[in-house]
Amino acid sequence: MPIEINHIPQLQLMSGNIEDDCIKDLALMLEDLYSIGEQRETPNKMRWSGFEEKNKDSHGSDIGYGLAGRIYKGKQLTIDENHQQFRKFNKILREAANEYINAFRQHEINNTSVSSLPEKWELHFQHVWSVYQFEGDYNPIHYHDSMYDSTLSGFIHMNVPDGVAGKWESDIAPSTNTRDIDGTTEIIWNCNSPRSAMDFRFPGNMFILPAVGTWYMFPSWLNHVVYPYKGEGCRVSVSWNIGIEWIWPND
Image (cartoon, rainbow, N blue to C red):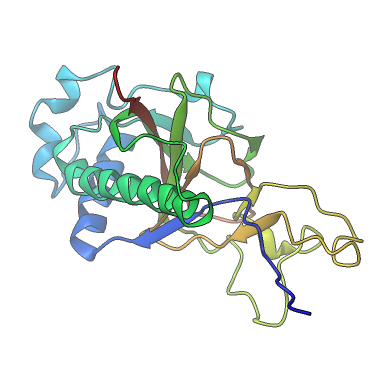
C-alpha cells in the first residue's frame, strides 16, 4: 500500500548577508544617527550634508513612544529610506521582498495549481528605524502592526556586544533556562510544550543568534522577542516594515 508523508509549513522565513561596503555605509549612518546634533569629527561625508536638518521627522527622530521596546538606556530612532547610505540596503530589501512574495506564490501554485495572490504588486517602506540597546534593554513579545493588508517585516544586526550569547554548541539547543539566549531574538509562530515531540508537533519557535550583517525577513504577524543581556557595549539593529499594495485584475 503506497504511503505519502507531507510536512506542512507554517512560516516562510528569509535571511541573507550584506557585503562589507553596505555594512560600512549602514554603520557610518547609524553612528551619526545616534549622535545627531553633536559637533564632532567624523569620517562620514554625509554627516554635514544637511540631510538630517531637512528630514528631522523621518531621520533621527525618537520613535520609541510607538514601539514595544523597553529601551531604558538606549534609543529607537527613525531612518529615512532615501538616505544616501541606506540606498544599497534599500535596494537589497526591495529585491528580497519581491523574491519572498514570488516564492510564496510559487509554493501555492505547486500545491494547488493556482495562487490566491495577484501577479502584480507595489512595495512601500512604511517604517524603518534603528534600535540601540544597552544592558537591561529588551523587546517583549510583539508583532508589527501595519496599515497595509500584507506587510513584510525584518531586522538586521549591526553591532553585537560581548554580553550577547556566545556561539552555541551544535549538540545543545538554546533554552530559556540558560544564558544562551541573552541578547538573542526568538521568533514564535506556534505554542510549544514539554510534550510537543511526543504529540508529534514540530517546534513553533526559533532562536536567532545576532551576527553583524545578517538580516531576516518575515510576515509582520510573526511574534518575536528580543532578550536583554548583561555587560558593556551596545547591541545595534535596524528594523523595517515593507507594505505590499496588491494590484488586483480589473482594479
